[in-house]
Structure formats: C-alpha cells, structure tokens
Image (cartoon, rainbow, N blue to C red; front, top):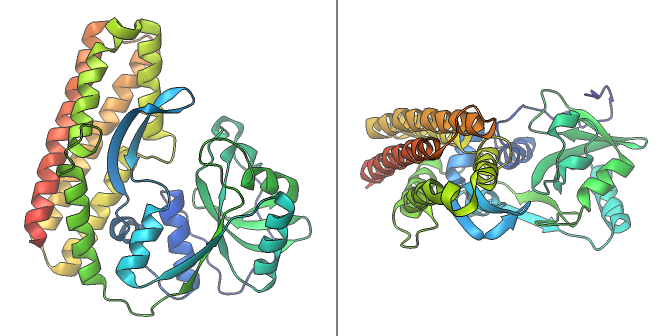
Length: 341
C-alpha cells in the first residue's frame, strides 16, 4: 500500500481508520468541520442498520442481500436529525469531475467521493473487485496524485489521477457518476439525545413492522426458508454459489452483516450511557451476541462453499442459524423500542 508523505494537506485534517466507508467518511467530513462524533454514533443516528433480501434485484448475477440500508441513507438521516446540510454534485464526464474536484481542493475543502473499488491502486489485489459503492475523502493534491483519507486504511494514501478518474466514473450498478458531497452547515453543539431516540425508534420499526417478507426480521426468516430449498431447486453447484454470495455480501462488501451488528451494538452502548438507560446497554450486549451468530453463519457457509460441509443437512443447519439470528434480533429491537418509549 502506498502511503502519503505529502505535506500539502490542510493542517487541521485528521485521518481515522473506520469500520465502514460511508459512516467513516461522514465522521471524517463532520470532524473536519468541528463536529466530532464517534463512527458508531454516526451509524446509529444515521439508521444504517437494516436487512433485506431482494431476489429480483441482481448484483453479479446473484440476488441482492443487504444487511444495511441503502447507500447515502446515513447522510440523509443524520442531516435531518442533527440539522446538518450536505450538498452533492454529479458530473457528466471525467473531465468535468476532475475540474470540480480540483476546485474544491484548491479552496482547502475536504470532500466525500464515491468510487469503484477495483480501480484503487492502493488496495491489495485480492480486495479489488467491481463494487461502485465505496466512499472516501479527498482532502488534497500533490502533483498528479490526490491525497485520500480512505476509511478502510490505517493511514492516508495517495491515488494517481488516471486511477481516481476511472474509479469515480466506473459504469454499472450504482455508478458513482463522479459524485462529490460535503457538509455546508454543521451545528457546533447539536442536541444528540432526541436524535438518538428518534433513530432507535426508526430502526426498530424498520426491522419489526414492515409487512412485506423481504425486509427486516421477516426478511431474515424468509431467506432462511428459501435457503433450505436451494439444493433441490437449483442443484448443489448453484445453491453453493448462492450461499457464497450471501456470505460475501455479509462479510466482504459494504453491506456489512455481522460487522454492522457489532457497530450498532457500540452505538446502543454509547446511547445507553448518554441516556442513562440500562435497557439500551442490555440491547447492546444482545446484539453483539447476534453478531457472533452471524459470524458463525458465515463460517459454516464458507465451509459449505469449500465442500467441507455439503448435502441437504448443511443447508438446514445454515437456515437454523439464520432463524436464530432473526429470533435474537427480534428481541433486541423489541427491547430498544421499550427502552425509548
């Protein structure tokens, strides 16, 4: 990985490693404007946690499984609940996008940008795949290289102009189209408590009350039911590939399954301390346990894909773990709702 040694970055800019690209990017942008909130607090107030399984929407030819809400949901909710105003711009061509980015950086502004992971040269080869939904911060430029604060890296990095333009204007699903965004109004001392309560109620409602089978706890149980049938319906080879895709969406792509459960648990712990609410702290512990079960699901699923665990019983076992995750999460969301009612 190429590490930046440039000295042209704004003096007040601070890079921090984060667990997730969107919440990490938002935290960095707000911190650079004077509002320092933890990444779990950004993720929680932004209502990042969710689940849905949409077999009619394909990514890489496989049904879409997501363990988080749609991209930019975090920005929308944290803006509304904390009185922050973001501006965003998309561009028709790489040339226009480059001119605009250079203009922002020349003003000393750090900005969020959306990119395709495959074109980022500082990513290890095994982590470079076609995914258009990655977010990071551009905060300076030195010659042909841009200074990047990527939430998934330990240190600031650099990205050459050609690679960055390819990443910003990659084609395909969720194409970034040169997206640049940045906060233009940030309160110095927002009222956090009502924002936290509203966010907790919202997430509990989304995970428990949507009547359609695709979403929330119902969606987890529905996917478990479908997974049991996959070997009979699709054959062992395709069924294993479908399990692999569910695991990949959970553990490798920015839909973050277990990792998001752990980060939301950290938010609940912080919210419990902020509101002096023991039920939220209990919900935090319970959600961490659910995250552990999701990790066990990923491990068993990976073993199935490697042929170390096969046959109909293996799919039944995966479905049982998934149902246990649904049962555990249902209790968490019920307790969250009770805690802030």
